[in-house]
Every structure is written in C-alpha cells, then in structure tokens.
Image 1 (tube, one colour):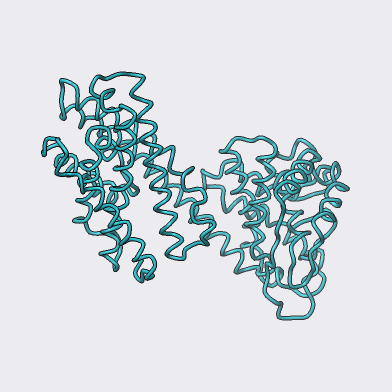
Image 2 (cartoon, rainbow, N blue to C red):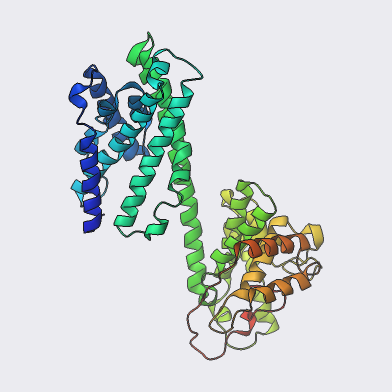
Length: 434
C-alpha cells in the first residue's frame, strides 16, 4: 500500500466520512462515558497484541460493544486504532483511517440490527436462547458490511476486476466472526450480570489462547507451503520442460480425491503428493533430463530412479504423510510392469494410483515446446483404454467425471528448447507420464 491509487484514497475518505456520520447522534445517547472508553482501550490493547504477536484481527470486544452500547457509542470503540502505527511502511494515514473507519461502520451496523431486534433487553436479562437470535443477526450484519467495504476497496485499488472483488469474502469471514461474536455475547452477558466488567474480561483469556493456537497453525502451514514451493522451484529450474507440470498434477490429484469422497486432510495430502511427485529429478543428472535424442538403456535406468530419490528427499518431512508413498510409487502400473519395484494391483498405495493418473493426464494434455497437447477427450480415451492394465479404473473414472464437470485448462509449461530436437524420454507415451 506504499503507492495507494487515487481511487482507493477517495474510497477510504468516503468510508471515513460515513463513519463520522454515525457519530452525529452521539450527544443524544444516554450511556455512562466510562463504558465506551473502557471498551475502546481494551480493543486498542487487544488489537495491538493480536496484530503484532499473533497476526489477524480480534473482534470480540467490538461485538461486545455492539451488544452493550447504542450504535453511535459502539462506533466509537474502534477509533483508537487511529493512534496505533500500521504494520509495514508508507501510506500511514490511509492505513490508519481505514483501520478505524472499516470496523466503526461494521460495529455501528451490528449495533443497529441488535438493538432493532430487542437484543439489548435479552442481554440484560440473560434471556437464553432468545439472546442468540439478535446476536446472530448482528454478526451477519457485521460480516456483510466488512465484505462490502473490503470488496469495494479491492475494486477501487484495482487489485481484482470489479466483478470478482467480493467473491468469497463473506464465506471466509462468517465462521471466524461468528466465533468472535459468541465470545462477545458472553462478555456482554457477564458485563450486565452482578459480576460486572471484571468477569467479562475473563472471556478474553481463552479467546487469546485460541487465537495464539490458530496463528501457530497458520505459521506452521505457511512453513510447509514454503518448503514445498522451494522444492518445486528447484525441479522447475533443473528440468524446464516440465515447468508448471507439478502444480497441475497436484490440482488434478485434488479433483480425483474430492470426486472419490476423501476427507479434507487426505485431499490436502494428495495435493502435496501431486506437487512433489517429481522432486526426485533433483537427483538425476541434468544432462540426462535435457538430452537431445534417444536415451540408452543405462540412462533410462538412471532416470527411472527418480521416484526413489524423491522418497529419500522427503522421508524426514513428517507432514507429508502418505504423500511420500505416492512419490515413491507413482510410476507403478496395475499389471506390475511399472517401476521402481514392479508392484501390481492393490499392492500400489491408493495415493500413488491417484497421482499416476493425474500425472499421465497432464503429460498428455500439456502443450510443451517439443510436443503439442492432445485434446482432453483424446487423453480421456487413452486413460480409459489403459484402465485396468496401467491405471486404476476407479481413479480414471473419478478424473473423467471431475474434468467433465469442472473442465481442464492446460497451459504451455516450457520455454523454447535450445536445440531443435526434443529429449526422447520426455515425449508423452501411451499411458505414461514423467
């Protein structure tokens, strides 16, 4: 955000003006002054700790304000964010203004909805489960306003086309904000109880612990992704003829896994397996990967060691799970004619059978600098012809159904070769893949 486009600055200024308008009725609001001040200070402290230490946002205090205060007073709670320095460098004023105006508008809207549905009386009387209805509606209003504002900023800044600016924002925010809303409701009920604000503050302790655990999970996941990206980039640099192939095999493996009804953890494992299936090429001499003309029997034998090299490379990466078996066995065939161990039938792990089909499909449908792609239907016909001999018929059927429903858009994956003749080993073969 170092160079904020003029349209985005105008959009932020408009949001700030709307936020200021929500405060017009503040003088007529009858509320003890210490309540919004205490909530504002608490929000500023939580925001500082969560953003600096854990990452992300922390909404329980804001939503507690929506459940406890009239709308104009609730809109005051996020304003201390103006005083906190933004993360990163440059464009400090737009960042500060946006970080205050955005939640102010959202919490004002949530407070309006909550108040209109009688939620204030339900909170004061600890009227459960009725109190959940206005609180849920307020959370939904909060998410809708955040979605509208964030999508508008994305469009104004030119980050994405306007027609796609709001796609997925509401779905991604609803579940986490609902959890924060439940914590905010607990704070509000305890605040109004005989135990007072001190008891309400105790709700924040488990929420902070949960946020820390969630942040640690995301950091670990980001480290996993970085490890995989580094390995794939190394393979792409070494063997430019297959650039982009790994990511597409990972995508095809995910399509198959979902079609087979696998749970999310296994789907993610299959994605890792597809992306890393050729990582063993790092152990193959570059001269063989880029050789022009046919390979000798000895050279082919060396190249066919790449599944074993790959398995050795990732053996110590525990989060890959069964993906390691897929890397080792993705060139095995159902009839036992594959490599490296000549496994047959059910001896081949299911994950390896999935990656084998995804690998062969992308090899046949990718346009390379030395080979034109086959049409998708021709590749499908070839897979179906080889089903039962080379490939698992159940896996082939799952890929065919997924591709016909979702489509497939292969891309050029290699630069122009330095020589006119392409490496013979890499040319797509019947029922084979790299």
